[in-house]
Structure formats: C-alpha cells, structure tokens
Image (cartoon, one colour):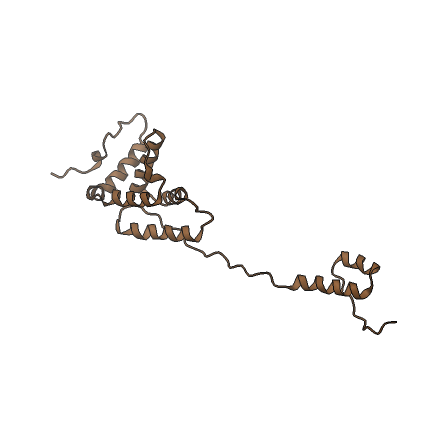
Length: 176
C-alpha cells in the first residue's frame, strides 16, 4: 500500500460523489478541494451605483433656480450614462421635471412639432439650455408668469359651453 495520508473527502456536490466511486481517492480529493475552493473565493467587488437625488420640479417662477435645476439634471445624467445616452434623452427627462409656465411653454412647442413647426432646440441639449435661459430671461415673461399659468390652466379646463379665453391677458387685473 501507499504511504500517503488518508484525507477525508468532503462531498458537497453529487457529481463528485459519483466521481469518487470511479477514480482514485487522491484525484477525487484534489477535485473536491478545488470545487470547495472555487465556491469560497470572493466574487469581484462591484461598487453599488451612486444614488443621485432626482431633480426638484422647476416651475420657472424664480430664474435664479434655473442654474440649480440644470445642475441637478446634469448630476443625474452623469450618474446614469447607460440610461441617459443622448441629447434627446436628456431633454425628455428634463421636461418631466418642469411645471407651471415652463411646462406650458414646452407643451406649446411640442404641439407645434405635431403641426410641422419644428424647434431644433428640442433635439440638442446645449440648444435646449440656451433656449430655456432665453425664454425665462424675457422681463415681460417674469412679470406675467403667474397669469400665463392661470390662462393655460383655465383654457384647458373650460367646458364647451363656457366662453373661451382668447388672450392670456384677460386674467391680468386692471389697475385703475
């Protein structure tokens, strides 16, 4: 007989138990040890995705918040490069986080797109950012934003029997 020490075989796998009956015990011991070792090795560490807070809703009422809003969107885009791949994806994401006057303005632009009036800034992120800055920087827009928002809301909620609002300025109080 051989002078090799007897090593107990730990059978974790049914394949190995079948294998043990037909192969020399030292080979089965090596195979069993390799199987056990492969199951105990640490898996490569994968860093969990960074949790970036989704942007606050931007209503356009405070122009100074626009920079902060766009920065939050940018952080989100950077944290999800496989999800937000194109300028179109960035613009669509951003449009879901606007409300009031900005949403009304974008809604008009999208309705114009459906009518064949195309806005190139809806397809280029840098053009979109420039256009939203331009739109919100118009002094008159800043003064009448609450009234424009009311106009868009009321015009969409009117019943067919009510007299339609023809101009947004119908809601502006007259100063005597």
